[in-house]
Image 1 (tube, rainbow, N blue to C red):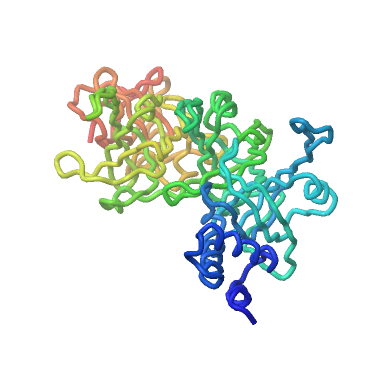
Image 2: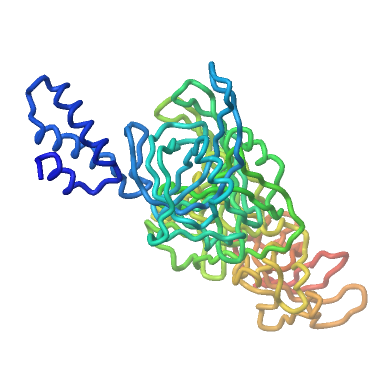
Length: 480
């Protein structure tokens, strides 16, 4: 066996020996006699190994040829096109394949496109050889050779309908139904080719978790069609990773549509008393203090904005800093709000502070002042978006209805009077001060009450008042 054959035998490649030997001869000629056949064969072998992609994530546009395994996650339609200077039509079929590291679009041409339409199935594992390039929707591989590999296994899940917990890196052709938790504005950016791109984000959740949905270019306009609380179906999405988190992306083939379905999303929040510096957590509570929005100049000369609110649950209080677009959210006193993916930092006067940045979501579960506990008030349960404290596992302001020693809550949410005196009942009500002045407003997590009192009170203070109630206002005779 000659030197070329020895090198070829040691090389695990799908390249035929005749093609390898021809490349060696070309290399000898290019080197002008500076390399013999054995040296040239080793150089060609080295080049082939460099192009071997262990995973899809290893593929880069600068490679000449790559070889990799991937599971078929979606198959596009066969499209025809006119070739320059030729009478025959060309055909192309785009196939998405994935492994545990990611996914990539593979373009199959002519006979391979026809074979894909007739023989290829979602879930098959393919051995692909081709040339990577930067396509319209990102990296793609123009296939030179594609073969099914029935013995190989690729750990990628392919489902008809996904839940958030089912999403895996590399999954494509994803259909998912979820409740909109938060939306962002449309942003523009410059691509490397000089064109302008557009992107927007919304966050959706279901009973298994939540995920950020990234909308590209024309699809970015969809973010303006939906509001928090609506249920949408994301169609033909694909999963990517950003900063260690999975995201569901929607490109030119994807869709986002409102659907008439019930989706429950219950956040798993951390008690405020348990928060520690450096954590990224979800917190929830009732708003007991709001500050005006402030603007500031960044080091790069751009203008930023921030707004602080303070929330309270039944374990404590914390200030939440809303940065950028989050500062524009409509949050009022007594709102019940869930903040997700907030970073716990060392705040003012050594107090902890939660920072809500671009990765965070802000969901107002119940607006202030409506005085309702949601449809489930009678039995103490409700959907997560109804705004009750019970449904999120917390009391929005620290104490449930009737937390005073003598107050009792009736089934309809009204406080039982301790004495009956006709039109002016003597009542006792315990709640948190969400408005000072005249009148004072108290909230017990389910109801708000106006109180006339000369006592000096502060926002967030928990008090009990007792006195006659006339026309919905308690005239406090005792405050304790």
